[in-house]
Picture 1 (cartoon, chains in turn blue, cyan):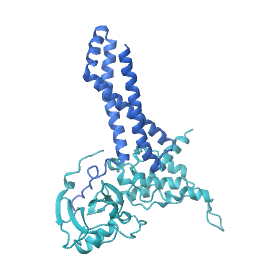
Picture 2 (cartoon, one colour):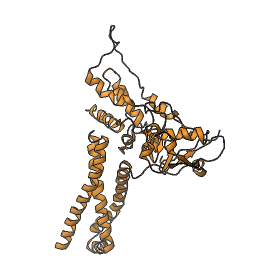
Picture 3 (cartoon, rainbow over the protein chains, first blue to last red):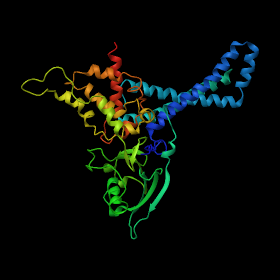
Picture 4 (tube, helix red, strand yellow):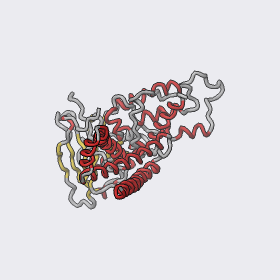
Length: 130
Length: 260
């Protein structure tokens, strides 16, 4: 007999369900943060390489495009942070009932937006001051 | 390993359309996954236009109606038609549920029905559950005790002790939870999945069972237990309103607590 086919999964499952959506977002933001770390390492290496290298890196990373990248990384960081806290609470055995986990999914979205706005305002404010 | 694309023999072709009978009053389109092992062909998606005014209220009624009057080769499992046997679990409009407790009126004009996700398909909506049952058996879902029962009575429990296992013991093994779990999709060869872990938990916390230590030993494994990443699809879809995700979290906690 021919091998049995595998029933469809990702292509048919409802992805916008809050469970899958928050899980995929958490992983995707983690991945983006890891990539963002490359920029951070570049900046740190420039810092260690002396004033001339640092001036070049600072000029490059200060470009408008990179300001947008930083803002995006900040948004991604805010979500990943809040989602991580949700997982920590879950690991204590709390908040795992259906209604609770649905509520916390929305709570994480709201909280991460607040954290993002607060962090962005603080950083932009510092940028203005200096 | 995570294999996001379906293998070549599993990709779905367009199937045939069975049009609604003349004079139909309330037509719904049911798009149903079909696979005939004797055809040697890939699975296909057939469309059945059904007059739901002339049919019972549940998705299972619609399937039975189609089998009785449109296409007798349509194959699916069903038995109790009241959500206690767990036979008719399938993926309806993107979510795993029991066909017999899902009302047609809660769904749209077009209803997509597939077998339980990421499972070997025997025929049409019938998934091969051999491995799922083997995983259930592997957690030894029966009472293990060295102490003999009292000679003149059963092994008694307090009301509270019974209430702790009331919910986990109500599992009907429909496999909605395990086949909704992406971790189970990618690692079902080594990850036990929510249903089997819920059963394990049910026996670990049973006041009469004396093998909790061995049961925890057996689960302390990077794959069997720890492939759970708290995605919560299991608890989200359970048709009996049980909570496998919480059971798994409690097992993880017990494993940490016994180290100290």
